[in-house]
Length: 225
Image (cartoon, rainbow, N blue to C red; front, side, top):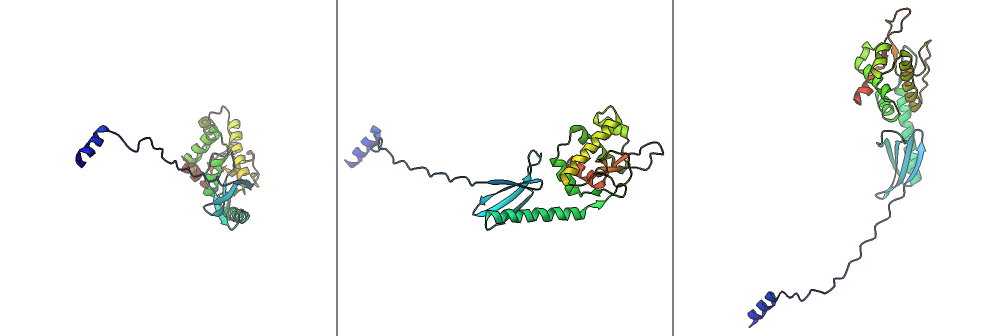
């Protein structure tokens, strides 16, 4: 008897629990996103806030820089302490860099390290012709390139335009790195070029020598190729 009743219920397809409403569980309220304070220090943008239970401050390139990677990070007992620690870390980093710069024998201009050049190239708004000239000069190495050759690779019709554009690239990099771009040695070249490189001595009395990039800048450009 018991077996036949069980079979009958199964065959009927009746579900004794169908129609009974399930108690809906309330979805947990999402935690509010941590507030982020944005500031500046030197040429960097500072973002700070509470992350995973501790106060963190981070430095990033200022918009509209092309690079978006984090430059430095610091933590502290409070948000203010984290920001202060980050400022100290940035200042120490900049002082170290300045101390590592060598002086160019041709112009007397401070020459940044490869690390500085890489950061500057990634963040300043160099034009396509300017990058074309720097790339060609980096490939040429210590042999350098004539003004005519440089103008040609960048699509300029005159050497004067190419020299002006090249100097403009040097000025942008110098401004970003807070370096004085004027040469301390007598020169007819436009301001800004001395931060990029120097001329060879094979130009003769009435002819300009070839442009040669500083070794550090050559390495920095090649690193981004």
